[in-house]
Image (cartoon, rainbow, N blue to C red; front, side, top):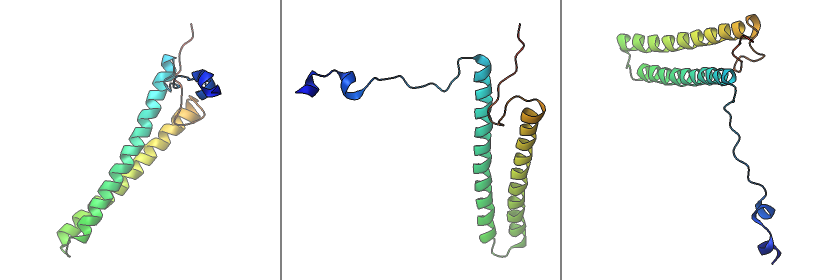
Length: 118
């Protein structure tokens, strides 16, 4: 009987709207957008690396001893490894420039766009 007399807030608590992850400040929003773009780039690069490595390994297995097919498979695997090394180097340079040289933030993947104050 007591539950029926209680209000909705007494039973389930106060309902709050979801917290938005998009900042209200435009410069913070641009920084968040750039950070999201970098994170998506890393994910896409990792998935692409995995797919190319698996295709190279598959081609190596089904080459059947054919020298030409085997060299193509080896080249595909080599290109995938070189590609991921290039991605890691570019991200490392980006982090050094944004964090250590420009001092945009303390972390590589979250920074604020600098603004001129009036």
